[in-house]
Structures are given as structure tokens and as C-alpha cells.
Image (cartoon, rainbow, N blue to C red; front, side):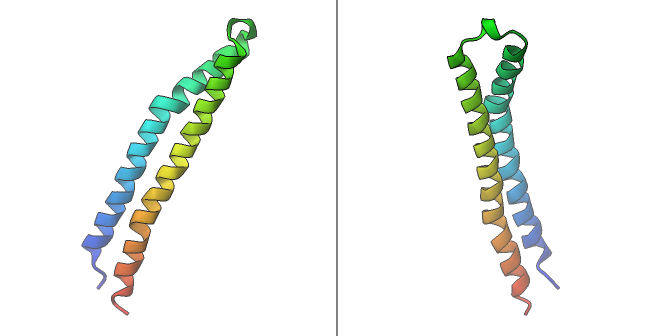
Length: 89
């Protein structure tokens, strides 16, 4: 019988880490960067190129935070889950 409590604990670790990083990435970077890019597409003269570049950098940083959060969640939880399952054998 696998140690189901450990699997649940490690799954919760992954869920919490990915939820926090997703919230930070979307709330602080992706939302504002995407809003500026959408508004600048409709009225190009209103926004300067530096504002558009800043929005593109915000989108890039947001996606990097998302990828980093997913990778961190997997690296912290998956080896523990696999290791706990291997104890049986």
C-alpha cells in the first residue's frame, strides 16, 4: 500500500507553489502588460515605444515566472512522490 498521505502532501505542495506563482505572474505582470498592448493596438499614437517595450518585457517576465513556478512545483513534489512510491519495491 503506497503512503497516500505523503502523495497528498506533495501534491498540495505543488498546487500551492503553482497557485502562488500564477497569481503573482498574472496579477503583477501579465495583466498590466497585456492591457497596455491591447490599448496600444487600437490607438498607436497615444502610447510611446518605451511603454510598449515595457509591456512586452512585463509579458516576458510574467511567462518566465509562470514557467519557473511550474518547474519549481514539479521539482519539489514529483521526486518525493516517485521516491515514496519506490519504497514499496
